[in-house]
Length: 261
Ligand code: NAD
Image (cartoon, rainbow, N blue to C red):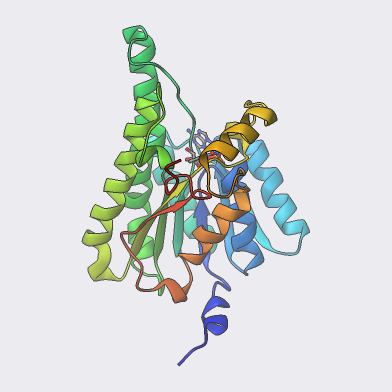
């Protein structure tokens, strides 16, 4: 029987595609995968920043390449997934991480609300199924195929004026469970992480003092999380040690959803 330590040393050479890899949790995830020996495709609509992340990974002695990929572009998802698979000689793991926030009240003008709804659904939800479909032919040839979708605690308990984002993220949890059931017979695991409040580009415009008050009042750990704390769970779900975990919706939220008072 293998030890957990042995099982954990097995991402060597794994071929990974991360969306939204230029910043925050995507960047942290790319770095953690690479430091475990994986070959990482850092993709983002901001191709220059993705290039810088890939460069910093290579400068640390690990393997990464970057691609410009706007996940709201269906054709680009197909084309870039094919390019990455060709460059890496296959694909073992995809991380559906790219995202934007979209606070808009339901009583906003129809145009504003519809625009937010469309953007949120397109980037946060539709793109995830498209990447899965583009990657499937390659994942089917992998020894340890893994899919991790990033949702949010907004899928589990929502904030006011965030209904488009919450609906899209709840969709990610449903997509995850349904794909886990559908792809389980092929040995492909599909899991979903619901981050709570994490210090990233997305939350950078919130003043530190407001973050501290929110975290003290609402989380069990009384602090915002670091992007690496989510990345570690994402990478763990891709280890052989996680071979019997699929269809799981896992909060990584400092106890936000557990806390009642
Ligand atoms: P971030 O802003 O630091 O990073 C998001 C990245 O996604 C950026 O590099 C951005 O350029 C990229 N991106 C945005 N739209 C894109 C598109 N159309 N195509 C390709 N790339 C695109 O934010 P983050 O917090 O690291 O977000 C990562 C994921 O985590 C998102 O799905 C977000 O919804 C989710 N999330 C974040 C928090 C939080 O508190 N930060 C909480 C829960 C869930």
